[in-house]
Length: 60
Image 1 (cartoon, rainbow, N blue to C red):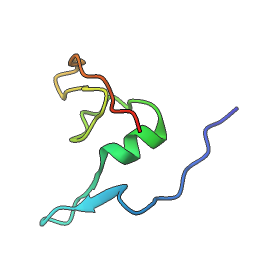
Image 2: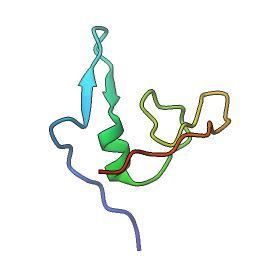
Image 3: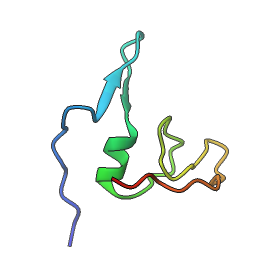
């Protein structure tokens, strides 16, 4: 079964002063998996260097 895109909800992202969209931890947890892109608010602790940091996602 293919994953279905989820509509964005309030609190899923914010815009930086430069105009970039940044997804929040809330969005990543709702999506449910790590994309391994080194996202700024990755709840799984994946870094841009490609190494997962020992971080446990917040529940609730």
